[in-house]
Length: 455
Ligand code: UDX
Image 1: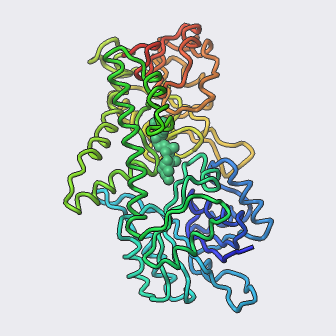
Image 2: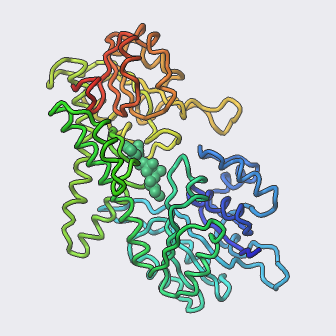
């Protein structure tokens, strides 16, 4: 079988998933991180992030001898056992590095630049450097310039992993995209994934870099559209669930990504929408549709606060000062412990500003008693956390569901109602069954739902 020596620099969601999955496809993989303690933990088989199947896959590939962890990019690049061809060097180097949003929404490329600087002299002739992080259009060209090595190609190969299903998404991709101005290097990277049998788009580096933004911004636009449509449903007495089900049967639209919510968040969509706006501004293109997508999302958070205010006080201008609220779910979506750009936290901040007294519960933040590296969180962004939902409901004037954790559906809502000061549940994910809430004596208020009414 065809295998390559692959170095993966960065062991975050993208890097660790890429490393473990490429190893599972038969490649020899060395993953590097600058965080010595993290590398130590990975060597002991401890995976810090909550990602279904990832720790099992890491353990399996380490045992199979195809995956190992080192400190520092340079050790990864030259960290392979000599395969008999005189080379202990990586043939392909994946950069899976953070590209946080810097000043004015421009992606901050310092991590990529530092690794390029560290490794440029060490790369064997013919090495392919692959950028897997979402980076501004032109980064492959800039990386090639920094490398200044005519014998090393730079390729863009964007990832499409969703947190919470990263391993599944990697091994079952809708498509593989490889962008490079040298066809041979692009084909070499595409060949790493050959066993997955996915449709593969080979293109130039800029198109590949742009398409990642095009995909994520389209998804953000779809969600802002649905959230706006849910609001319209409330005004005209329609039901968003029925509307989205019906439009979803249109194959051109599709059923996925049509659930209204407290606004989209996470580590990608907010960053990528702002970054694409920057790309457009720099190209002197006024991308009004994208700006409206972002504005609609910002407004959605305030809309949730207004809903809570109306539900609890019965008035649009009622005061939330010292009103106790129980928040269920703080992560940016279910199935992850990631709090980055979580709409739940943005809403919590607005509620706190309005004077509310908050208590939060999230199943991903209660810690793992069997893992000392995973202690329970006691607060997040000033919101005290409790260990169970009932405690969060205690004395609350409303419970606000902010993350779509399935476990919230089957809570003992009668017991919850029993400890609350007012029997109100604001369900920003349209997650809960209205009849169950009614039976428990609770008034449920969702988004654009006929059966829970609008607030
Ligand atoms: C996203 C992209 O899906 C992925 O392809 C890309 O590589 C990284 O960014 P992720 O950030 O893990 O993945 O989250 P995703 O599942 O896409 O959800 C993004 C946000 O949209 C979350 O806040 C989520 O709660 C929200 N969402 C999603 C909805 O409100 N409704 C939906 O129907 C789907």
